[in-house]
Amino acid sequence: MRKNTDSYVLILRESGVGNNDEQMTRVAQLLQLEYIKCKVRIGCILRDTLKQLFTLSKLLCVKYQDLYLGSYFSRWQMMLRRVVRFNKLYLMDDGVATFLAQKKMLSSGNVYDLFTYFDVDNLNTQEIQTHSFEYLRRRYQLNGTTGEHVFVGQILVEMGFLSLGDYKKLVTKVAKQCDSLIYIPHRSEDQKTVDEIASISNVKILRSDCSIEVYFLENGIYPAHIYSSISSALFTLSKIFLESRLTSILPSDLAEEKVEHFNEIVIALSKVKNIEVKKG
Image (cartoon, rainbow, N blue to C red):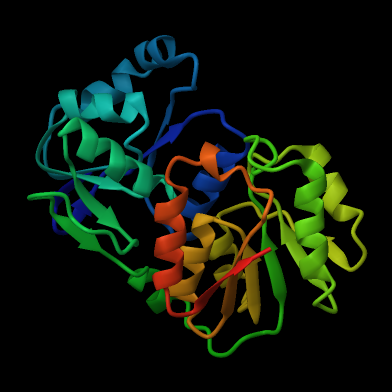
C-alpha cells in the first residue's frame, strides 16, 4: 500500500505454504524494506484474521493513494479491498496465474487494473502498469555471464500435470547437454521429487533462502543458460539477466488440458526475445 509517492506500507501475508513465508521475508530483508507481518494461514483465514485485528486496525486508520494486492485468487487479499481505504487499486503478478486472472476477469466482468511484468492486452478500460525490475537492475549491476547452467524446478508432478518419471526424463535430457546442471527446487516441491532429480548424474541441487532472482543477484550469479518448462521465473529472469539464454521445454506428456491458461503462457513465452520455446 502506498500512502504517497515517498512512503509505503508493506504487508507480508504469511500463508504457511511450503517455505514461501521464509523466502518472502528474506527478500524483504535483503532489499532493506520495512514490512509488517500478518500471519493468515490457508485453512485458518477467519481465526487468524481475528488474531491480527490489532495490527490491521492500525492500517485502516489511513487512506492510501494506491493499494497493491499480490493475488487475484487470494480470498484474504481481495477482502482487504473492502476494508482498506484507497484511491486506486492494482493487482500484482502471482506468477503466470496472471494470465488465468485475466481470463477470469474477462468472463466475470469484474476487471481490476494490473501492475505487471507480463506483456498482456488490457481488458476494456483496464489500466496496465508494466515494469521490468528496474530497481533490482539498478541495485545489482552485474556484467556478463558467470557460466552456470540452471534448471528452475516446478511443481508439475505435485499438481498432477506430469508424472515423476517423465519429469525426471525432462531434467535428465537437459543435464546431458551440460557439463554440470544446477537444479533449483520450487519452494513447494516434494522431497521425493527433489531426491529423484538429485539422483541424476552431473545434477547439483541448490536450495535458495529467497526468490531465485534475488538469490542470483545477491551471490553474483549470472547464468549462461536457464531452463524450465512453463515457470514464471523464465519471464522474470529474462528481464533481469538480459545476456542469459533461456529455454522453455514443453514435455510431450504434459497434461495441458489441466492447465487452464496453458495456451496463454506459451504464447507469452514465445513473444519474449531471449526465451526459446521447444517441445521436449
